[in-house]
Image (cartoon, rainbow, N blue to C red):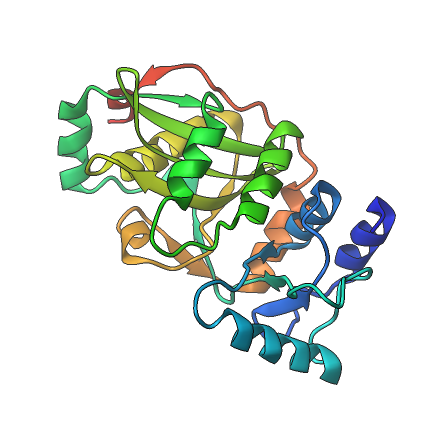
Length: 255
């Protein structure tokens, strides 16, 4: 697939008006396709685990019926990559992040520092290191390529020289798509979110797409918005440049 083909397909895709959260199928996981998809308001979510074959059969049925469009150039022999846009969309506003009392106590006592983009590969590997993960080898390679292209970023939480928590995601102008997080010490991933929000307030990032609704994120201030409203914000801010602060900082400054 050429860059123009991927860009044109996702540019004309009506993500806001799609009848389901599954908005497209197929295509490669190259940088051009991923960038076009994130700019349109959707992201890849491959089927993994024991139901992978069944889900792929269901996806092919939808594609044959014309219910879900295929990305041009899709390999008919390969599993179809699902492109998802949740409705409603769970998001976090950087200037309205909530710090629960228990997290405040952890941050006050921990002695952790944070950085950005100092250990992207290690954060990605830690996020994938669990019994069930959608972060397949192909997905990890794709996000590494996005990082090298300057689009995917990580936030690291350090206890001295030890990486104890972090997260990563994809930057689309002044909107950030959070992909995954991990922790090796209690509350380290929550501290990562709080620290990221403070850095983003400085940089002018207006919205963090958290993709999946969870109690964990709700405690930090996650809200649900209409998917069409999310797409409007994305289109308004996706072309505005952002300079993210990556210096090493004590996490206690967030309090």
